[in-house]
Amino acid sequence: MKNLLTALFVLVALALGWWAGSRQRPPAPVATEHEEHEEHAEGVVELTPEQIKAAGIEVRSIAMKPAQSTFMATGALSADPDREVHVSAQIGGRILSVQVREGQAVRAGQALLTLDSPELARARADYQRALVETKLAEKELDRRTRLARVGDETRRQMEEARVDVVKAESALASAEAREDVARRKLERTEELLEDGIASLQQAEEARGALREAAADVRRSKSELIAARSHYDRERTIQKQGLVANREVAEAQASAERARADARHARDVVLAMGASPEGSGASVTLTAPRAGIVTDREVTSGEAVEEGAHLMTLLDPGTLWLSIAVPESQAADLRAAHSAELKVDGQSYRGRIAYVAPSLDPETRSLKARVELANASGHLRPNMFAEVTVLGPPTGQAPDIPEQAVQSVEGQDVVYVETEPGHFTRTALGDVRAGDRVVAQGAFTVKSEDQRESMGEGHHH
Image (cartoon, rainbow, N blue to C red; front, side):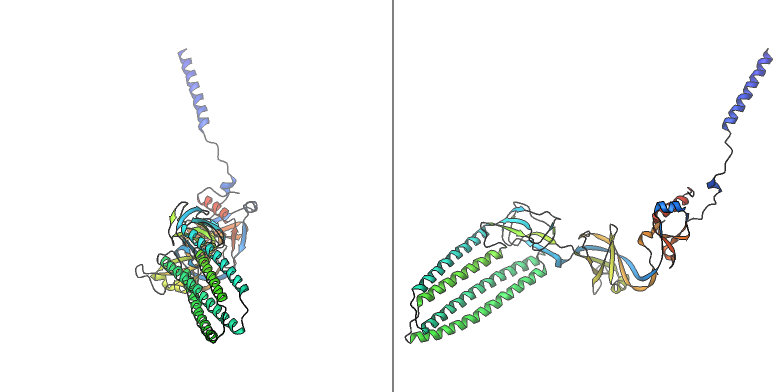
């Protein structure tokens, strides 16, 4: 019985061993289509017509184009000073409200801010008072003229000569007042220019206005001399017994003086940047030109002095790109004509408008300025960018579409179609005219290339 149990135990153990061995044995290998496919060389991609269509892959034959020598530089964008307007307070006062925000686009004539000034209130009151006095003087002149006797021809000529003198004196006083306003405005502008607030253009405009005013003074003086000479001749005739109508001449002179005072008061209000026809102490400053609001330095309730900088308006349609290259590239920069930079995938090219005549003594670099059209407004002052400086033509080069160029392991490459459905990774320098390059869908081909390079195999 004991032998029988032993035999049964051995039999069960053998059966269990066979069953466990069959569970652990791997299945027999089955050859697959991928394993039967021969490995591709590195950088070679094969795609089926279906894959090419699905990925939108397009191939373009490469032609030649004129080539230029290029080198890289660093640049910084800045505003074109001729397209900047510095808005300043022409009178002292308190800011009532500011109608624009920094970065906002404004049109010419749009309200920027409102200023309250007691000085303006006084100037407007003086103007209104001068208008009233002018009306009274003109009424008195009309009354005396109607009451005057009709004199002989000699008396009439003397009266006209006297009126001419008064007119010439009034014109001279008005011209001198305008000259005084222009001189004070030039002085303020030059002070602002020294502080970096006003521009050279504004200073030149102020100087031009002063020159015109001075010319008016000289002309008025000459006319006054001639009028007095004529009047002296007519007065000599009067002394011989001819009577002049003094009352009419005096009324005429009073009316002319009143008109001159009104013109002067009006010019004072205009010089404050306000409308003479307005009333009260407030004035609304408007945009002298269209642009973007920058450097807004005031807020509501703030007190400002005459000449204080309030904000800047910039027309960003053209910007300056300042670049600097080391001494070793100075000759290349002097020979260059244009430069290009890319921002957010968009290219901007401009002409090199100025190259410094000498190197910077501290940095030993050569500086240049590029003028860039910025109709889209995407570029902003104070941006930094990598710049491609374009030199003179150097012959011919393949015209490779920008979207065809891919970066693989730090190298710029394209994919050349060697036969339908077969694409070979090729360095840019090895591309020749007539090569068929993947122009659309190059990233898809690159992805397939990198997948194969990582050992994932070729996929159909």
